[in-house]
Image (cartoon, rainbow, N blue to C red; front, side, top):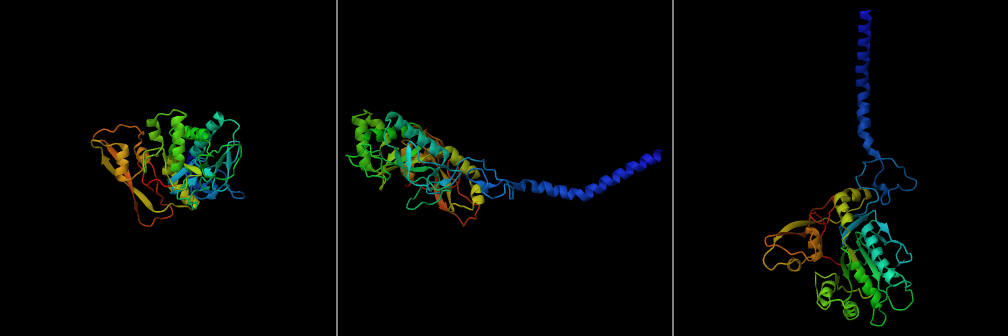
Length: 357
């Protein structure tokens, strides 16, 4: 009886050893391949695979959160992933049907500002919208920017009830000063806007209205309008040629930029896109007596708003002697592979260039 029990146990042990020898390699292989059969970034943007495609493909699972906007690189050397499309509605008349994508933050901030103008002036014509970015960003000719979902061109509000479907050059006779000033106010109310490009001649009209009619103090307007100065890097509204018939707004989009820094390389690799091989190398400035953010920006010929973004500072921050301010200078590196991506933003290595339209 005891010999029979021992024999059974030995037989079971033999079968166990045999099963491990035969089946363990297949189990290990199955575990290895398991992460490689999940939904991929081929479904970007929007989170669903292309029509007719299988939802399971043998490529690694990306770490990019589904539906989260990624602003990768700078506005004039960048890409966009999971952009939000702006369509014509009660507030907007969107001209483009291909270059009308932006980060979720860009679209939300634009809607909020235009809705505030509509609330104050109900029943007036919609605002005309020009270009934002392509679905996946990149160059839009003839623009130098509009590449990473943070730029939008808006037509000025005109007097009268006519609804133009294009940009109209502003003059003292056709500009709706009240509504255009309300739009500037709404855009400046939060911390969303990096800067706005408007021709000096239009700035002159808007500043005069704000000062004479709305009774806005000159000191406040000095921080908003570059006019009557030239070449300021510290004001919200700045002069750029070609912006007499529309205003160009660039947004910070901090969440989309942060997501681009974290997930951008993988997202672009999956999409077969890349950013030009430029990198931003960090260097430090030690605050000395008399230094301000504006003076530091002028000295190194960078944007004040970029210094604020890199160091997480506010426009009116008081600097302390000996304080370290981090800045970036752009250098070209060796030819990059398809997965090499330059990032932008605070404490990040990436594509940087002073703001251009």
